[in-house]
Image 1 (spheres, rainbow, N blue to C red):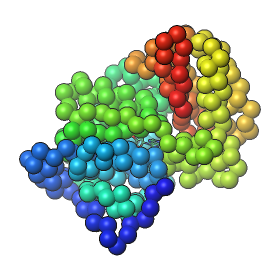
Image 2 (image 1 turned 135 degrees about the vertical axis):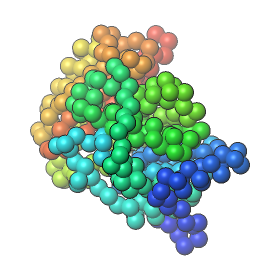
Image 3 (image 1 turned 180 degrees about the horizontal axis):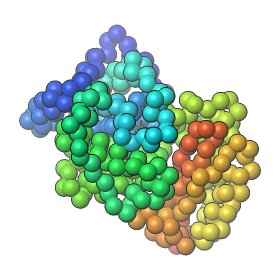
Image 4 (image 1 turned 45 degrees about the vertical axis):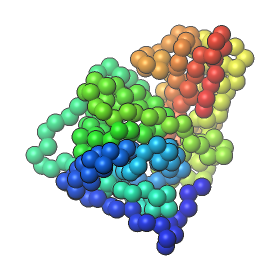
Length: 301
Ligand code: AMP
């Protein structure tokens, strides 16, 4: 569990301007410190904190960013109502001993003169990219801006957003970024629901129904454990479990190759089983990592 800040904790330095963030990062690099970066949109939960703890194992200083990035939200999405809990987040970061919080304003990141975007071809066109047109362009553009500003040695992302992590790794490689992309496991509630800032939108009944995503993936895990390799069969059972829950509307369920994000017919090498569903009005995503282990496959939720 995270703890609140104690009076003895050193304060996290909150940085609002790009110029100051660049200066701090430049000084850290000049001292040959290993800068770790954890981008977030705030409303911090244990999923975010797991990335920060992972960063702290090998990096110092650690820079966490909190920026609700408008360009990754579609016109009908929840940008306005996205939870913003800056003071609580700052206390959590202080409790963890994070040195720097980068919290720029929208105008600082996107002045009126802003014209550029970057997008990764193919990988971003299916699944989340299809459901949320423009989403990945917004993500890659803001992450590239952060990489330019901070120039981290390591940047930490959650496997919860597996397609996003894959796209960012592609972008970092293609554009010769020095940032090494580290992808961290999914942190879940006790009943399996993947932590997400959007879980705060769920009513009590929706919160109970929301475990359907995990339960579907868990059913898939059991089928893989008992030797099923056929993607269509695995997805049929996954969907059956999810469909059994009232109030859950499946948007997509797919099993894809972990490199290409193209659907597979049968399990091979490393795959993801990916799900997206509406629970009430709240859109949730989750996934399972499926790795080949000799003749069999191991599923990690
Ligand atoms: P967000 O604030 O939702 O943009 O997420 C910031 C980072 O936290 C992203 O790299 C997410 O993949 C990661 N993240 C979100 N939820 C979880 C979770 N439950 N477990 C691990 N990482 C997560």
